[in-house]
Image (cartoon, rainbow, N blue to C red; front, side):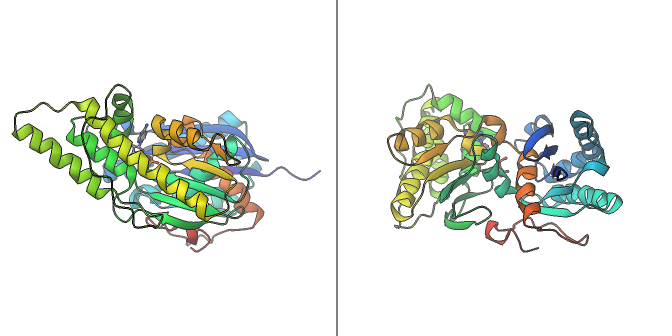
Length: 339
Ligand code: KG4
């Protein structure tokens, strides 16, 4: 019998220190230490604090994962680690930990692109089938990624300025809502009315996005109302903004399905937790041949299970790095094999 493939995954690109272990595709454990409560006080992630907390937590999460899985380091086949994109110092901690384990236990080191992780998290729900469109929407990225096959990523549309999650967070901040703002806007929009008129961003016929104009329009409108002594109805502003922000995604995805052969749509990244995006995209494609995968909420936040999942495919293709590997905070998904 073949030996099982056991992948230890590590993730530290932002404010979660995480370690997970898979065995022949099955998830044995998924340990996450979140720093969100610490960063909430500052209204956003403080990079220096994030690095220090990763350093404090990384050994504990690895130990906990091995214990939960009942696995010894000697049993592990390979170590998969997030190499980018993300915060440079935060990434560095996870990579150093992975390199140390790879060196001591003589295991292959597999560098994983964080966003491929969010895409492959969907495989914990259903196998990906191709051609597939991944709608990658997070705090740092807004991309439509076309996949003809496994590990085949082509960006067919992306933001020209802000990421959609970033615009949710900035709008939330001007409305006085706590970090992470996307969650709060989502909640308030459920009870709000679309009563504020906001500009619908111009569509240049491509599949690209733009969020900075929309964000600025909300900020200017809020300031104008305040200067005039008028009360801003926060839930109505949240609903008005969310309708336009998510509407842009739905519209570009529809356009992509007209231009490309697509059998499956998968959502990926933090903003894929948005309830309006989930319901709108489901409605849009429910009576079509295109299958939409909605990831469970745990897959939308950062975790190492998704890193281990990509690690399995990269292990199969022998995509290994040497121990002089460095991080890449702005690594493009199409370059996931270049390091
Ligand atoms: O994937 P992620 O951790 O970002 C990066 O690593 O870049 O996602 C975080 C982003 C934040 O901008 C947060 O406000 C947004 O995802 N987010 C949401 C929701 N939950 C999280 N945005 C809209 N609706 C939500 N329910």
